[in-house]
Amino acid sequence: MPWSYEQALAYLDDHTDLERLAAGTWEPPTLERMWALVELLAEPQRAQPAVHVTGTNGKGSTARMISALLAAHNLSVGTYTSPDLERVNERLSRNGESIDDEAFAEAVGAVAEMEALSGIRPHRFEILTLAALRWFADLPVDVAVVEVGLGGRWDATNVVEGAVAVVTNVQLDHTEVLGPTREHVAREKAGIVKPGSTLVLGETDPTLVRIFEEEGAGRVVLRDRDFGCTNNLVAVGGRSIDITTPLARYDDVFLSLHGAHQGDNAALAVAAAEAFFDRPLDDDVVREALASVAVPGRFEVVGRSPLVILDGAHNPDGARAAAATLADFGFGGERFLVVGMNKGRDPVEMLESFDARLARGVVATAVDFARAMPPEEIAEAARSMGVDVEVVGSVPTAVQRAVGLAGEDDLVLVTGSLYVVGEARRALN
Image (cartoon, rainbow, N blue to C red; front, side):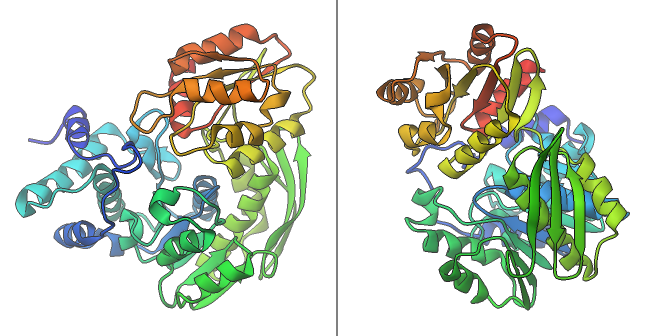
């Protein structure tokens, strides 16, 4: 009998979820389970060419923009991203549409069958990656855009042989897994670069660029040397940007996302799509794709009067980008922050990066899982900075409290973790 959606979810819940485990519980990295299981599944990762995307910040947004650009050129595009915000189905999509429950259950059930036959017990993220690759192969899609979960070299997605490898940037994050320096992090992320592939590299630090070049890409397309966002201005509902690439120039393009960093991500996405086709993109198609792209949970406006914004910034660089984007809005009222973050962060550094001193108040909260930082720690950090703060244990109640404190002309930013944003989004929807 075919699996039900509920059976598929129960199967996932019965397996180790590394995304939610507390720091210090990581296992030694290995791709042995993935290689064994893709072989049993008839090598679905080889069914179509792939664009493989990693980076410390912006990889999810960049993956979605690449997908939109490829789909706008009449390709069937399978996209695999993480984490999900409201439903696990969001991680697997074709041309922007999430996998339906029946297909999801079938794809996960196929992985479960291979586990039963082989005795190999994968982790939850490995199951989802295998399910995505199998679904893409069965549809089939013309190209897969695959976002790395963590790092690159040992990530479950690295069974994919990307014709194009995309790296947004390299910053310190997940250092307990990836290593204590940017050089360590770069070596892990460089692991997605396959010999002979095209590397589209958004990181420009010369020391780190050399690390990526050592992986043997056939061609390296480098930000500020080969491509870039040369004009990046605030526009109503997004940005107005100019993009240069090795093959073309795209001027005065409207991007339906907020924040200067998204203009940089768009340039990376256009360069990656050009590298995939090995030709300039159609100008009108670029405009169509970037004008309509949506990235849930990344500076997403979900309410007005007061203005309510969700942004999954989860490290200091992301927090600084969120603060800079807030400054672009030029609203005249007060700002309130709802903040929950994961353990391993410095809460003072994160709040400083969010410009929390400019906020009328902070509501500290937490998601109910092992990696969540207790909200009392966030509150203590806020008090040490002289910021008014309240502790509200549940995310939906914390959002409700902040909205209640805010006036019609004020702004509420919910941030600090995509898991916090996901709970807030479910509550608001």
